[in-house]
Image (cartoon, rainbow, N blue to C red; front, side, top):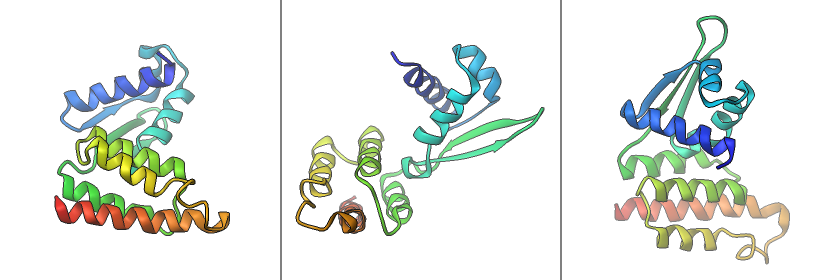
Length: 152
């Protein structure tokens, strides 16, 4: 298992044990896991984002901490949170992360997520000029998530 995956799994276990919110010191966590603090920072900034349904608070310094909170628990709230966080442009990688997160949190079935991923893929948007694809992808995914919200 990669170090990044180990850090993710450790933080997820903290979140599970604390019912959706975990607070820790970056340096102490790095020491516990056996990595450098910058790896903890990387994982937090790339895997625990608002788009993925997390709120991250941190305070630097001697009494510093990191607090990660799972934002939404019920499916309709999670879907609306994502719709509101997409903005006017969305790259394919971020769309994929969002959909995987929805499957992991059981807000979408794997089949639904795969259909949405196909609809917003670069292959599906190939006829559109490259400079417009991220804007089209954002609009399409917002509409698909709103349809899922209506069905939830």
